[in-house]
Length: 304
Ligand SMILES: [Zn+2]
Image (tube, rainbow, N blue to C red; front, side, top):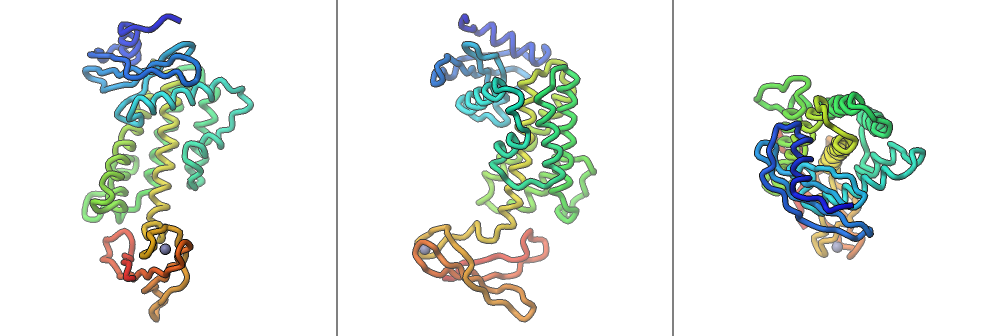
C-alpha cells in the first residue's frame, strides 16, 4: 500500500464531517510497527470540528478518533484501533457481547437494567451494516445514557437548585458528580468524568443523525457508552465502600479488614477497628455525623 499523504488524511476527515469543517493541519504524530505492520497516527486539527487522531497504515482501514473524548494520546488511539481490528477479524461466532462489556468495564458490577441495554447494543454492533443500523445504535446508546442518568440521580442531589428535566442526562450526571465527588482531592477525577460524560452524550447524538457513520465510529460510540456506565458504577462502589479510603496508620498498607467496632445505644457505629494484614497494627477510625446535605451520613477520621 502506498503511504498516505496529508491530502488523503485531509480529504478523509472533511468527508467524515460531511464537509462541515476544514482541516487546518495534519501531521504524523507517531509511527508503530510492533505488530509487524506499519501504522501511522496523525494529529489533525480542524477549524470547527475539534482535533482528531487519524489511524491508518498497511492493510489497516483509516479511522478517526476525537482527541477531546477518550483518546488523550496517539498511543491510546493506536491501541484502541488495533484492538478493534483484532476483534473484527475474529470469526463471528467467537463474539460474545457480555464478554465485550465485562472487558471494557473491567468486570464492574452493573445494574441489571443497564447491563441488558448494553448487551443489546453490543449484539447489534456485530451485525450492523446499513446507515439505519448505525443510527439506531446511536439512538440506543442515547437511551441507555438517559437510563444511566435515572439510575444515578436522586432528587435530593439538586439541593436548592431546579430539578433537571427527566431526560436531561448531562445535568443529572453533573449533580451526581457534585454530590458524591466533593473536595479538592477529587478535582481531577471530577474533571475527567465530566469531560467523558459530555463527550459520550454528544457523540451518541451525533451518531443518531449521522449520514456518514461507519462501523468504526459506531463502535467507538458503543465503547464510550459502555465505559461510561462502568465509570459511574465505579463511583457508586467507591462511595459505598467504607474502607477504600483508609490505609494502615503504621505501615500505610491498604490491606485492611474490620476487626471490631464500638456502637452507641442506637446501634450507630462510632468507632471502627481495622486490622492490618501486613504489619498487624490496629487503625482506629472515629465517625462523626455530617450535616444532612452531605452525601455520606458519616465521616471517618483516623485517630490512631
Ligand atoms: Zn500496617
